[in-house]
Figure (spheres, rainbow, N blue to C red):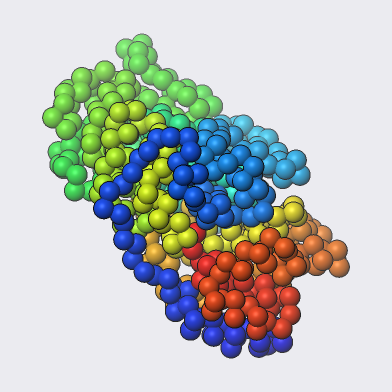
Length: 526
């Protein structure tokens, strides 16, 4: 055991006792009796919102740059700027890393077709030469890791932090597990073309983009959904998890009718089109890897949620989208999930209701729903109290520790997040990771977070070198976080509780102070 570890163990025990394993500030939020939605440009200014607390909620974790940006624009103008952000703005060195990735350089369809050919070649050699199969699996893993790294780099360095949070929120809402078939190679494109363009746009457009993406169609088995051979998996999750929510009034018959609507919508990876006879040509459509094959579609009339859906082929999807967007249950379910992510585990009915009203009135305009939520007394009262899930904890720590340094290898960070149980696209079921405190505030989780705090505190040289490089003194120096010497961080620590400040004062070295700081109850909340 290193000297630092031997010092930290009892000291962290003291911190744990002081903060009740950092879930100490677990006082239940008492929402105000009335939720205000004053849609004025100086709402935050009038509420005298703490700039750090607001920055810490609107971003993946406040740092000097983000708080200065908020103060320079003013909190209300900053919110407007963040709500309007449509693309990532990251430092040139980080953008260069992203541009060099295979997922950035190779067209998605071309990449998937090459992978499919590789899969076929490996299948021919099964039992004779397994090296081809291993190479194929390794390539799938490499592409999936690129997707996770790109998302992580943007979350750490992008100036458009609300966009990055919403991008992750929707990826989790429309969760696709990386463990099924070759889906892990599709996730980068799913994020970039289905989720990201609509993360701060319109929910109907977002929902349609996810419905038509091959990653979703494969993950939830809709490629096997055909007339007289129905597969209800996607239809069920579309109602239960993506739109209306469980117990919202739809029936098993509605699931079956929606499955009929979705028949014929599947995937074709081969470069060539199928060879339909002349009678089958009408209505066939292909876009990217997604195809609609009329021969597999049920053209009969359907009745969904009491509404007749005429058998018109692929255009039935638009009828369904319009129908789902009109449902108060959809508005309420989406609003509640947003409020749970940004406000509290149990947002008030009043807050959810006014958000749902905006959702229906604006026909799913995500920024309008978010602004209604942000400009509420309940949101302001919640600042500093929302427990961080592992992603928020690790990214907020890294944003403080390495604000002015450009990471070149996200491997250690991905490993830290994995060790805390929130691997990128690693949740096996389509419901996604929980955003509630009870899912992440166990003693085992907090012990694991203290371990991550130690690793960051002592510096991880691999962050600043490629996998091919040998570790040098320069890498070690770059990895040494200067939290203890950072004036912004030191000033921030003065806002912490007396018990946290007392624990920090007991540190015997800069690395120990760093570890104590990252382990405080205040760093566990946003």
